[in-house]
Length: 322
Length: 249
Image 1 (spheres, rainbow over the protein chains, first blue to last red):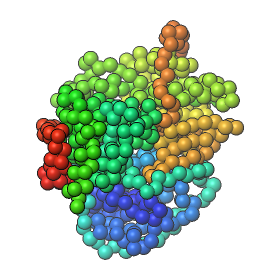
Image 2 (cartoon, chains in turn purple, blue):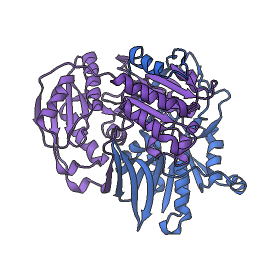
Image 3 (cartoon, helix red, strand yellow):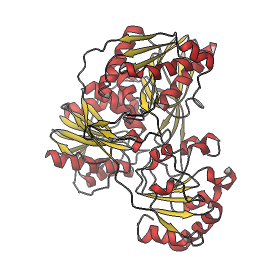
Image 4 (tube, rainbow over the protein chains, first blue to last red):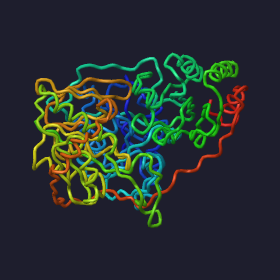
C-alpha cells in the first residue's frame, strides 16, 4: 500500500504547487500508516527530483519518454494507472489544476476509483475515507465519503502549507508502456506565459473592477502588483469589456484562486466574484462605496477613490520594502 | 454530424445556500433553478456550429440526469435552440453515476461531438466530462476555450497551466469547456420559447451503476473577521497592517 502523488513539472522544474502536493500526500500517508511515492513525468534533473524527498516522498519514480512531452490525458491516465497498479497505491493525489482536471476523471473510470476534487484539507477520517471539499462555488463545504478501494484526490492550489519532512529518497528511473499511436491530442501551437507570475500560483493578487473606470487607469494597479511581487486579476465585467485579457478574470466562471492576499480595487463584490476568491487568506477592499458587499468579505478596507489611493499604496510599499 | 450538450440543473448563482435534514442536504425551498453557466456557454457554441453550414453539424441534443422536476430547465435549453432533449430518469447521486448514464445515452444514440462544462456550480467536481470520455474510450480535451470544425477535424484552443495551446483531435470526442468558448450565452427568443413547447424530451431509464462517492453533510464556510477600515488619506497604514499584523507581504 502506498500513497501515489503525481508531481507535474514546468520545463524541468517543480513549483510550490508540486511540493504542496507531496506535503499533502505525506499527511495522508501518516494517517494511513503508509508511505509516499512521487511520480514525475518528463525530463527533470536528478537533483530537482530529489527535492521531492524534502517534503516526505519516500520513493521518487521518474518517467522520461518523448511521447509524453505534451499532455494527452488518455496516455497520462494510462501511465499513472500502470504505476498505481505496480505500487499498489490506495490513494492517488493530483493537483486540481488544468492537468489534474484533464487526467483525474479518466483515471477514476480506469481504476474504478472515486474522486474527491478540489480538496482543501487533509481527510477528516480515513475510515470511512471522508474528505472536505468546496461546493456551491464556495458557499458551502461538503463532507464526502469515497467508497471505492482506490481513492483519487485533486488538491486545490495554495490551500495546504508546505511541510518539510526530509527523506533522503532515491530516484528510480522507470519505463512504462506507451506508444505514439495512442496519443490522440496533437499540439499544433503553444503560447507559454513567460516572465510573469501565474495568477493561480501567485501569493499576492491585485485585482481591478469596473470602479477602475477605464483600461487606461491600470498602470498603477499593475505597478502595485509588481511592487508586491504579485499577479494582476480582474472582475468579469472588465474582461467582458476587453479591458483586460480573459485569463485574468477571477470569479465563478473565471479562475478560482486562493492567494494569501487578494486586493480588490473598485470591485463591488457580487456573489459570482466572491465565488472565485473566497478562499483567499486575506482580502483587502478599496472602493468608493462604503456599503459595497466586498467589505463584508474583507478584513481590511479603504473607502476611497482608487485613482488617489493606488499611487499612495505604491509609494508606501516601496518605502516599507527598503 | 450530431452534437450532444450535457446540462446540469443548478441553483441560480446568487442563491443563498441553506441546509436541511441536519445539514445532510440543501434546502431547496425557493431556489431558482438554472442551466449551469458553463453548459449554457457549451450550448451556445453548439448552436453557433450548427448555424455555420461549413461545419456539417446537423443537430444539437441536450442530455441531463435527474428527476422530472428538471424539465423547466431543459425547456429553457430547448427554447435557446437545442433540437431535442434526453433525460435519464434518476437522482444524480455522484459524478461517476452521472457520467456512466450519459455514456450509455451516447452509446445508444451516437454523437460526434460531446460538450460538457468544466464544472457544475453546485458540486464543483470538474470530472463528469472526462469520465464520459473514458467510459467510451474516446479522446477528450479539458479547459477548452475555443472549438472549430475544419475539414471534419476539431481544432481546439485549450488552457494549460502556464500557457495556451492549439490542439487537434479526431472525432468523436468530448470537449470540456470553460470561459471563452462562446462570447456570451444565447438568450431564448419568443419564437424559441413557442417552439420549445413541442420539442421532444425523451426519458431514458438509468442503467445500474454503483456510485463511488457520497456527500454525508454540509457546513458553512468559516466566518471572516469584521473589516478593519484604514483612512483613505493614509494608505501607508494598510501596508503596515499587511506586513506586521496579517504578515502577508
